[in-house]
Amino acid sequence: MPLAPASSEPVPASHLDDDPAFPLHRGGKIEIRPTVRVRDNAGLALAYTPGVGRVSQALALDPELAFDYTWKSNAILIVTDGTAVLGLGDIGPIAALPVMEGKSLLFKEFGGIDCVPICLDTQDVDEIVDTVVRIAPAYGGINLEDISSPRCFDIEEKLQARLDIPVFHDDQHGTAVVATAALTNAARLTGRALADLRVVISGAGAAGVAITDMLLAVGVREVIVCDRLGVLDPARGDLTPVKARLAARTNSSGATGSLEDALVGADVFIGVSGGTVAQSAIAAMAPLSIVFSLANPDPEVHPEVARAAGAAVIATGRSDFPNQINNVLAFPGIFRGALDVRATRITEGMKLAAAEAIAGLVVADLTAERIVPDPFDPRLSATVAAAVSAAAVRDGVVRPRAAGRVAR
Image (tube, rainbow, N blue to C red; front, side, top):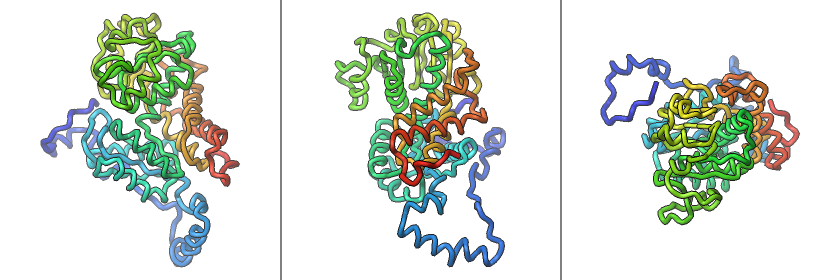
């Protein structure tokens, strides 16, 4: 069901009853359950006082034991301020809570990871960072979610500098990992090397920046990024610092003009900005073009329009079309792998390993309508986790006691 625009008017109860989504969400979608049962006084004495005191004393002497004797090794904190939620934008922390509950549900269902969502009633970067740092000791990782650009870059960078657990902004890196996996397979399917692709990205926000960086890392040589005013060119005087840095490392051909100008002869279009791209612009792309229209709920190019314009491979962010570029393909396995080896951060190598693992699951049976695995593929999370764990060991970001651990 498409997302409806937010309204300032209260929703009548009769309308809620008519919408099948509301019964599923009634009472929330997550809960906390014990992993042990207390059925008698002996059990009570072990789970709580006095037994728990002995465990706490041990942790006071050696905090690393928290990974063995608390839920820290399998728990993450999901953090949002509600400023960039799905296709809804800045709807605030309370309205963001159902989405954060949903994210927690997916972490548990696909990665076996316990999550606590917190929706912060502030948009101040330093307040968010200070708050998360103060409550981080109970968790093995931090997932940032639905925080608007460019603040999301600063928040992630500052948190990672102050914490020794992974900090991961899924809107950036999860999207980049899955898009890279999908493009790797789309290139294979159409008989092209990544290095030979000319890629045009519409959107210079969190997802656009991260996708650009990952595509450059896997060897794509020509990436052109566009915002609402056209191609990011260092000569433009209106670029923000983030866009200026993006312009400096892209557009090696010196393209200028509009998005439509940039698409002429391009091999790949990746949309992460919304808006509409005309059929004529897609038709002007190179033969066997690849079109990833990832805006939700309305793709920049409807799949039928892209197909009519000659696109060979088409992907969207929606589950009702083939090739959904869905972050759930990545984030459960990435965090599972990071937690399994008690990583202190998520490196570029770990993200690339995740993209390769996702792409590899469907190499044997690639088709134009199957360039990424199904989210319910039983191999998915374990395969990504194993690749991420191995990359963390190679990159030297695991705690010494965890270096020899085997992924679950």
